Image: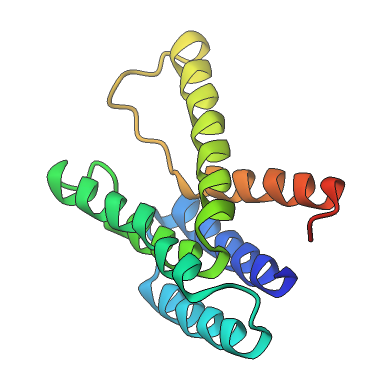
Length: 146
């Protein structure tokens, strides 16, 4: 499983940089991630097939949300969530998502309270996914689950 964490972490670092700098997430990075995650799953046999496939569900939800909101939530975020969910599996990815939601919520609260942010203030989300993954990775190491 450590290989999937490293792979997903690398993809999140690259995507966080491009999300902050260019407001873009490259699909080529996501496709490479999906292929590499599949190869790692097959070689390492570290995750049951159902867990990897169920890890796609949050990404599908975000893709649907992107379509419904006319991309207030970007399609790139949804595709990135698909690949990360497939890589880490259902429960580990849900833990990362929950942590990232808390982090982005705290950041939004800070922006509104101290920086004059508004309801429509755009916030790049991928850096918070990276933050959630790092926090969850640290928790995994502390608990000795990895």
